[in-house]
Length: 435
Image (cartoon, rainbow, N blue to C red):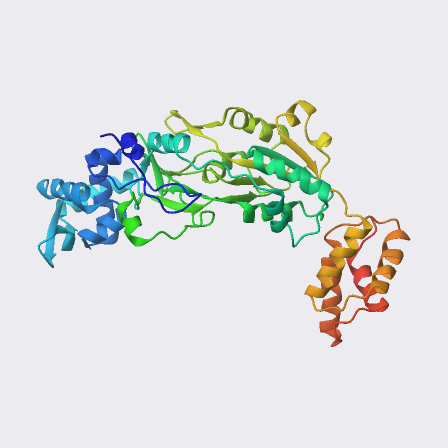
């Protein structure tokens, strides 16, 4: 049975809305990897970790000991690369394995070729097959759920009606508008709305090359009962749908496979790590990359649902692209790219300035959360003196920033947290600047 056939076997149920776990491979063939590949990885593991129990090797490589790893260990013993140092029982899981001199020399040669040590990888064809056939479909939101996840923000009904279908599309979204009106905050709340989970491989294998995939900075594991975990293919990690945000630091090479010549293996790019979740490009237009070039990079993935990557050897691989991309910018869309490019992004949504009524509600919420008593007449003064009189527009972030300024003054002067006209003027005069 091939590795793809093995994935097609009935999976292990762990919960509604979650993908089933692939069953543990029952042979080397079902891992999709060759005996030589697994033998090399085992040698490098012993080289780096030292002597290990058979059960510890199984945990390191995330492979079953019986029917898989035991055959690898027997092969290495027959070739005199490893030896049993001692045993604590009749089962080979309780035997301690170590490198022989011959094995040490071979392991050092292998480390020079690639120093990857860790869980056995999943072949790229198996990952591709899983994504195409078994990944849990994007679960849409109801208006009620979206209102709940946005409940700590002040968002008007019209904007909510636009955001819901855009999120449910699972395709692409362009959020634009003045800085400080909550575009990033809205996108971050989407992370709370993500339902279900995804299976993330620790690493991928492409013709003997390794791509490190699982990243604890972006992938949050979902607890799985131990008995189900042990019965599953532990090379996969059940995770919450990822939500990855990048900003002005993004470069074009960050969107391609990154080969590290020191360790001689690849790291997956952001959008590959985000598969099954959300990838947000914040401050779009502020990157060193021209916006047109960045959008060009997404034409095929957005339209075809696949992405192409190139290895150092020139070999090209194709991977399913199942990502909701959010572009967020403070720059007017027409100043970034031509209309023809914008048409490729499904939803264009303006996050506009708050109305005076919305501004007042934001101020009230923030004041109460920071320990200030909300006094409408003092807010009237702020709006009249520092907004209407000078023709200043409202921004959703202003209440928080102004009240933080006020709190800093209170802490410095030893005052109680009580708003006064003097305190409002001090906060406004040190926050706003006339350009």
